[in-house]
Picture (cartoon, rainbow, N blue to C red):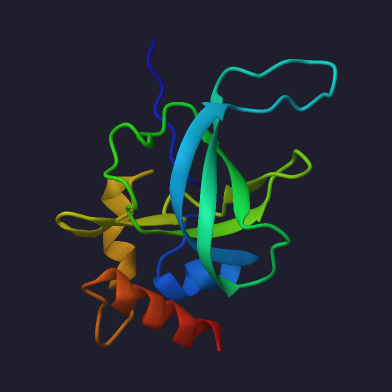
Length: 153
């Protein structure tokens, strides 16, 4: 039997996504590794992966390091092997259950500057979130950053 899951309460607008995030980071993925265990005595667990991200900027919140570890589902279509080097991404984050890790606040919590425009690669069906409720929707990554900075203020 195959089961499909969806979010119970996904954000409806970019403003909603900004409000839910404790930290918003601009950055690039440098590597992907197996996800952490929830217990110190256990090894990596199946079903999660960690995106190692080098932050280029912080739009909201505070981080103590230039490098961030973000836990995502292992089935996420994210890998430096399939992304062009230096692909710009914006991560809408909150603390993960594991100390020292963050996680996206929603499936739309990662927005990428793709060849076809702004997309949410963790769930491409939510890519329209970047334009809902905004009078002048961002068409480029720089415009997305400006829109998010305005919403943070």
